[in-house]
Length: 333
Image 1 (cartoon, helix red, strand yellow):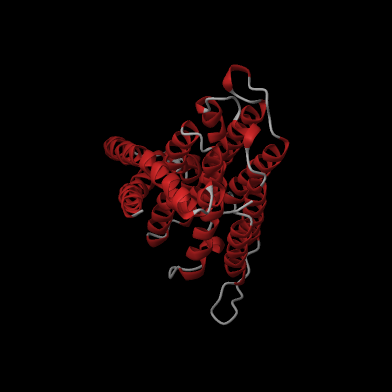
Image 2 (cartoon, rainbow, N blue to C red):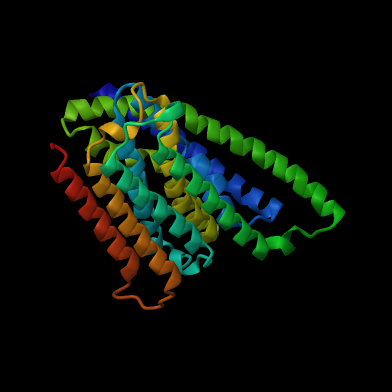
């Protein structure tokens, strides 16, 4: 078991280092392009930090561990909300959710809708997959594209003035953008290359511990593949860029759902939805509850604290612990 644990930890360490680089580069790209940190965080950064889920889960499906893959997707959604709650509870710069722009609510709504659809599709299943993609996966992709376009249009209306600058500033911005893009791509590639090792080691740990693919995928692998989100969100909060952090976490939860398209294509025996453990619907529902609490915290700008505790993020932490207990209780079924 030791060798699998070491591989798991080593691949996770690569993800952490690369995630730190991603944050700085994403912030520079947002500054240079004027697109806004909420959109950059929810689409560009979220896509990069979700690469572990993409690479890991494709590998898991190919080794006939579909429940491990899907458990990772919904477990990552749970873990991202755990990260948000922890950052909101302990950030020294001020309350993260209260400091995030209202436009992050639109990103949160998209994540809630997509994860709720994922829960429904797990329960209904699918045995039809023309061209290798089920209608359910295709619908998730279409909703994601429509939602991110809406986020983009909403963001550009508020940041159009940011792109106006002088010639010298444009040249400097172009050089900075090119450099940041190169580093961003390199860090994203490092994350993608480390992902298969995460899947392999997690699969072996699942078998050795006897906890099962569904629980290990949701808890252990979900936490591990959310390491980039934790590192990037933590770094963003440290530099006071709350929109980048919140957008990244909700955006990752949205991107996770379109990974079902890749899983269908990688599946050796048709749609991945046709052979899933129904427990994943519980994971998805709990993730939706956590995201709804996060959305409410963004919209409700309460200033009240109780005994130095943020009540909204404390509730999110409690729900996450309840979710893990429920999943563990059903792990042998």
